[in-house]
Image (cartoon, rainbow, N blue to C red; front, side):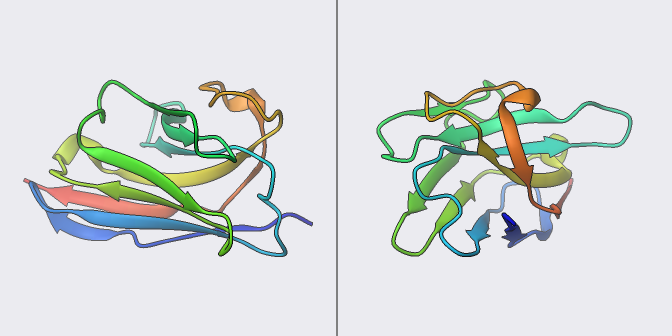
Length: 125
């Protein structure tokens, strides 16, 4: 069973930073792309950032481009999301997910087969 565990969420003020981590058990993200999504109450889950297994390709939502950076360490089976200059509109539950096909990062939820439980990020103004 694939298991993805997110960590690093918390409460910060606008302008501050957080670093989220997605840790996979038993080498379950080896060979797969991984992305971060987020969801706020009443809204659909939205793509935030994605990275391919070989780290050659990354993709970012326009709303976070220039502020967030996705990276991964395949030896440690972790995918990180560095979030700088956070804004109140970044408040959401953040999820990491494993992409089904080993292609460029996909933005559609249906392209992912396993998801973590999520970590809450709250940004106060």
